[in-house]
Length: 286
Image (tube, rainbow, N blue to C red; front, top):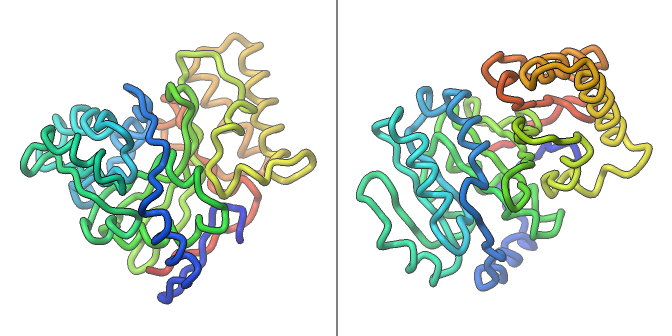
């Protein structure tokens, strides 16, 4: 198992993973959600512009015990994307039944399914699977992401990761379709810039394929050390949040980490680090 967010994909899904999925169809996630928990993912999607370049379908995989995240995503992005359709996907039949009365034809839909449903209900410009794989075994991560990625439209983005219960801290793997492959675009760190935060706190919401690889002395631990040092120095200089973020990106690149420097993202303290372990990721063949 690669630990850098990269994935190797073959057309033959391993039978062990298929068996695991069939068992888990009757074992939904805890399903806890809260208003505004995934707001930062939609901020990223809006600033990235993917829904303008790709298909205006947004799949929310594992939306949980109520439809909060699905409805909020449509309310945030719908006004600027009139063709947007947000589809909530859940493996729990009862949760889908509760959500169905909130559906709006052509705009908000709810369907029952697991990871495989992303392909069935694609193509999608955005696929989001937050707080889902964190509850699975790490060995399941690679194939789950590859399965969902088959639903991506050209230039589409897959976000997979974890957030704190309130959404104050959020991390996600960012994958992007390029031609017939899906590449790892980077690890997104999305703290709430209106609240005090420490980079080390973000370790608690690392995606499943990273969370167990941050032991002292590891390459990921060294990255967080550089991240923490830069944020601390910027705050001691009493910089505003946008200036803190700009300095942090510069410091991380000086330390050898490649970052997404798009000003719109940096101003909102959306940090995308291309290679936190200093290695080039591979591709997901779909």
